[in-house]
Image (tube, rainbow, N blue to C red; front, side, top):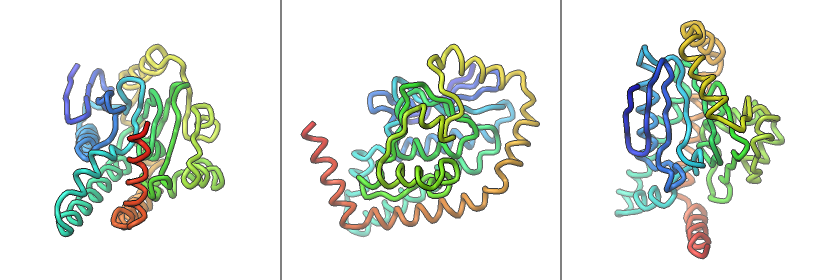
Length: 265
């Protein structure tokens, strides 16, 4: 079994199954800019590797991911003078775009095994995966409006398509938190399992080892090809809007309120 480590990410490959594991349980697998880059690189390597038949994303510990690491990201972005800050914001926006593009362009079957709560972009990118499994303790939370964010990860398109317009709007605009069972009922999740280690992971190992991966990936290409160019355009538009949000006064006010509330907990 091959094991590779990147900042915040551990990658294993065994009998055709490549597992990309978010690996910072002390921070609930939060996504810093370095972790965005790590996942992007891991996906690109999985796409290029002929020995990788199926790729699975998961988290370590009891969280899938707490989403964007606001403290480290904002500290990094907001240091320096005005020109430096604008340059860093543009670079962060491109990092985010590359990250989501890597999901959109991934040519092989991509599975998410959601081992606990998921927040923000860790939720929105689930809709770009081909299959999503979840433990009963998983929840799906997109607190964008609370933080003056707008939808990302192509969720402005994929969520209404999967969930229907009304539920998607409630999730994206009113911070409706979905349980694992609600995720199953609305189509975001394909199966809820109380024992991922005994049910889901053995099944994925069997699929990767025994199923015809060439036919599987050709089928994925056929299913996904109709949306690919649209999703790339949607991602670019969402990132452009987010970049505008990151320079707005109400965004800064929301961040200050968020960290003030967090410090009192």
